[in-house]
Length: 613
Image 1 (tube, rainbow, N blue to C red):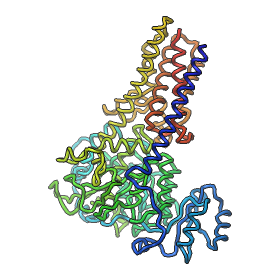
Image 2: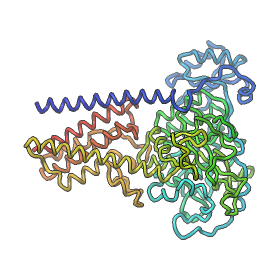
Image 3: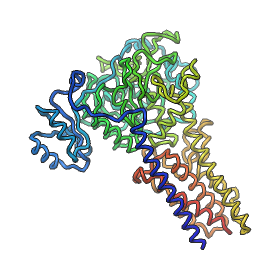
Image 4: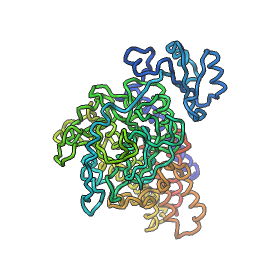
């Protein structure tokens, strides 16, 4: 009878988990069509506006990932065209380009072919207009006097009003983005002096088809600086997630432009090589189904995609920011109003500092641009601390805070976006303005790094520990009510329950951000090896508590600890099944909740069995 009861409990939890998974997947499908980001409608014919953005006579085609080169060549012969691999990496992502005198006819044929995932005109995207305005102002920032002897000691930090606007300094005691890889899909990244302590991992150059993704423009390095400039090194300025790693993906030339095919490959390459955040401070006015497919590919692989909304000063958000699965970022200036150049619209998700080099609202003697160390545009042999403005500068603020959130254990892209939006604040003097959680100029509000990290760390940890305590309490109450008695948890059991469920999750808020195995529940200890490793299915299962029980159950003095560990792990898994803050690797997304609930049930039943005398 006892075995039957345990089996019924397992089946109930498993069915509940699969029901949650089904409802979750339905909700995600619904959000794609009913959310603020409209589904991409592919361009069927080129009008004057779209023709100006397209490479004449060229299409870009994304074949199914299992399509061989021989199959692609055979289709080319059938259609009377030659497909060219977009890069030497085509075996990985199956993106090709093709020329035709009848691009619209060929496009229709390709879109109707079941072997083609997406096909579109070869559009050219680039840096948002005015992205470099005001850079010469930065050449005057030669003051090397430290702000103070405290943290950070970067002498030019006092000019970074934009970091103060998002409360970065207040955040750094709790999170610094440890090990999170952020891909900068841009003009490349140069190892300027104030990136000396920042780890730059291997990237790729899709402009020249080489592994050397060094910046030859300046824009990408400036963006990388906002995300992860070396900080508290006594040099220059600070960055938001300064313990994150930068992955340079060069898709824009020295002139600041690049093809849809190259950008799409860059997105896929970054997602396949461990990036957890992608920043794209680039864009164009025309939608591309190929690029939209690449953004979805990255999102489905667990990557948070952050994009600049565009600098046209119009009510139309640029692409890729307007795609589903991208976080569209508008720009604010010092007084927290959105800037004159920032695009707006229903697709805007959040606002962040983009700067305005036409004004000095804070009267610090410096124009109010975003200040970072980069190579000098037009004179790339030199580097300096330059002021840029644009939604290009706003986007990496969000990408940097996303890295802080991910480093805190919230890694699922939808969960990361939710944390960023739920913690965003209204602009100064407008406390009641954003009451519905959505505004066409601010989105959910202004980015708040401190609130986002606090929410990520305390909400998850509080729920995990609360579920564990409630679960243990209910089990003990049931056993004692039945008169059979129960094994006492004792101090060892309580410690094991806490470490299995949440760890000492409040410690980062007290200024101890690097103690992963003390501040996370046991399943999340893989964060100690970097966010790219988070969600290991061996840890996100009942394996450890079950094995520990099998090996140590004979030691009566350890039974309380074994029960606490099993219940704690069960609570951690149950929380993630319901709230989906992390993705379980190697398990299909639609089955994550079922997997987690089944293993939570096994863990709870194991704990209950141990508690019975």
